[in-house]
Length: 138
Image 1 (cartoon, one colour):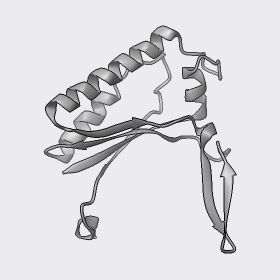
Image 2: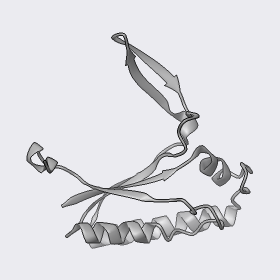
Image 3: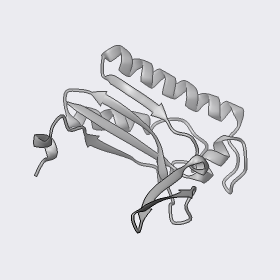
Image 4: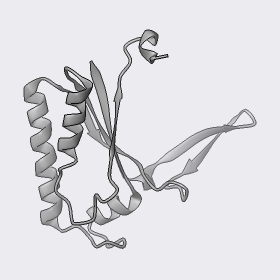
């Protein structure tokens, strides 16, 4: 079964990772390097186990554009959005034996090093990937 693990962040997180002090202090080069090394190691382990299908990090929310429809006409809004506390920061698609294993992988990702307090409210969503309409679960 394939699962998508979705991780979330805020514009503040991206700003601090880029070296700006956005309220909790800027990340140091060493802290950013530790995060990168950790993620590279975990991704390599998942690749070697045959469980990694794909993974990507996403650009900062400030680069987001939202497309909607108003009165039948498409419109575009720039991000980030004041009402949005967090946005999708990245994802992993894994193919593993069970939901429990997907939860275990997400738990490991949550052990990524970061400055103290950074992940106080961090979380990941894990969702099964449907192969057909029959997999919708209802």
